[in-house]
Image (cartoon, rainbow, N blue to C red; front, side, top):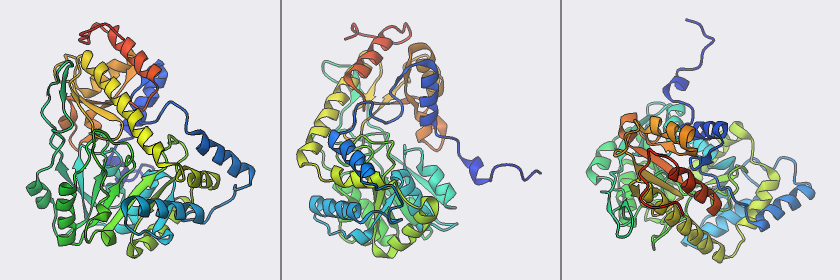
Length: 410
């Protein structure tokens, strides 16, 4: 057998389906409601800070684990917001949350370890585990029942939530369990993990001496009175939690690739070593701009959540009116929908039909499950888009004879 082939690891997962949908959408000139990047400008103060940093010649390598000024800002804001002391020495700046997750996994996981993952999951987590040499153990987030909402179409209310079975979660832990990955608010479901749920997870981490790797990139994008609770703030968890975050979603700069980890001293050294040899460091001028971003007034975050809540409600109304039962998200900026009632094939067929025939891109639900069949009746749409973008998607939906529109396009 030829050695001129990819590794065995690379055969165990596919390319990103989300990014594939964006490429296909670009070929057909569609409305991109698939990949989670805003199509509106980043805050002026953040952009101006980046330009100023470039002009001030912050253009060479920063310290590999992050500019001191940015690490101080990250530590300050986490401490202030969650009343848990964090030092700059516990912060590692990475090339986005994606690299932060990969560096963490490679730093703390050994071959033969197991990692618990809730599904549906953000599509990177499975490959991250495989590339780290571990075995994933999946625990189901059970979807809420979809019912009719007064004055709208069928939808699952935020109160219903996506839930896990504590017994199923407990059964996933054993002597080989090294870590559990948590994503709250969650992509793709919009679930916000409650304090009680996090306490259940924390108790298992303490029992089995496991690490919690918590992806909290959507911490400020949250609705309906829900509150974000970092698992690191629970009793006994600060010393066994790696918190991952980024500038990307909060400040609408997904292309900057500036993220970070907050970790206990026992793990920080290993994460920094792996990060150093993966990417050396994140872009120096954009790290300086991150200091300005983290210095905005608290009103920025409440305004951000309110603006996204309005977009959420707008896309829910559009999707429901065109026949898509929706699972109302409590956080993040995605809506999972049920397509079982349509006669348009499985999720992949339906997604391709929407792009090629309707001109709107979504993500097939199967990309968020270990077994594709579990997601074949679901599509994910994102609403981090301008009002004009959502209106154009609405218009295109209304022109499709195979979607069940219940009212004229608005």
